[in-house]
Image (tube, rainbow, N blue to C red; front, side):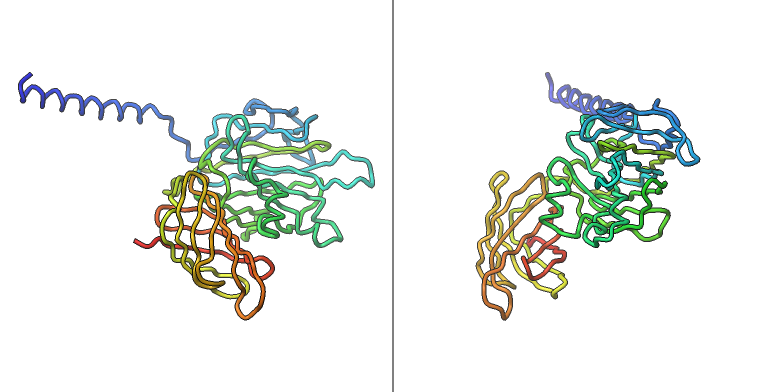
Length: 341
């Protein structure tokens, strides 16, 4: 084949490839700006471990979910939520005998996989809101990212960060609104302009997925008037590289601190050195998962004897990183870092 023929052939291949790519993009379904589900029947639901019934509860038509398992889901058909808002009216009625403690558990999952193997979720525990035990009151609303970050792990590792108090009335309707932008989410209740819970650093590894209703055993969960508003996704990607030298700032309830981390990653394992506040040349150990990191190192607290353990958790996005950091028994706050060029 002549050089001219080869060039013409190559150009033709490029044009065909571009045309195919454009055709593929044109065939990809685009998400509607909003989706509304009245939830007066079960036609828009795919059930997983639950029974769904159309009922009227406290003056409005709704879907009632119950389960014979520990918990279950009702997936909203044709939802693929990335960023935006999810709003719904929900209520919980427990089915336990008098005197048996059962706060109730009803929630909305998002960015969920079809088999519910992974999902983010906010849920309510209305009974805890009326408790005379302040610790229980502080467990009224909860964020989880299953299966890796359930309520117990988050509560033990990061107390008071992923749950909080909210004024809820058991068996009454609560308007629930979830706002999601990238790795940041906020939960609003009963049309309040202020969030009841803020999660700055969602734990899930999926940036998009389905929306699902969630219920628990020994109760009835009611859902009505659900609306999804899809917005342009934040330009973030998973897989951020942790290796390198990082300048770190730590803003805590005990003050502001700085340091430098030099990190090396091999597969999911991270090792390195911390220097700065809490001591020089402190060994760092941790794990990496698709851009999410958990790091620990030991050091000394300023002007006090003894050893303290610092823990950082968060996401790497290109040449920046941020998340939560605690120094055991001393401080809690947020960290941010910039990679040195």
